[in-house]
Length: 258
Image (tube, rainbow, N blue to C red; front, side, top):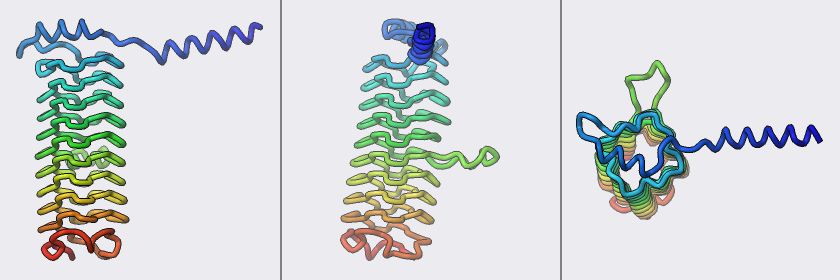
């Protein structure tokens, strides 16, 4: 009997440790946002804001650096221009939100919902595996490797198994990113930099890759069925037979393959 109550007590302690409440509720967050100005941004720095409904709010004048935002709902919110470095963003709902010009460095955003989000001109280094970025706007985004921190190892974007179907990635930089099994179907990748990217198993069905740079990429089992390859650079591709669907792609004659 004593053993039974001992383990029962231990389970209660473990549950309480894993289910800590957020530091603030939505009402308190709204109050801080309402009082904020450019000289005194809303202080949400390093706060635990997990599992909250924060949808539709304006965070432009807020400090969210290093905050724990796991599983919270920021859909239709404005977070443009914020520094979200070292925040915890796994499974966050950013659908239809404005994240343009944001900095997201050293962050785990795995499984997050960023469908229809505006990420134009954003900077990202971290893990975003299995995230939903369908129809998101990543135009002019800089998600390329951080070559200034080589002493810490190659710091880059991990975007394995992400859904980028219908997304706008034009003029974006994904230098040396990991994008294995990513879904790019019907995406806009005009003039996108994919230099040295691992695209093994990626799907570019009916995507627009005109002017994109795929120099030095890994293209094992990558699907280009119906893709527009006008001016696409494939320098360093030794075996074109590995490129699936190449015979049905568009403008293959103007692609730069060597």
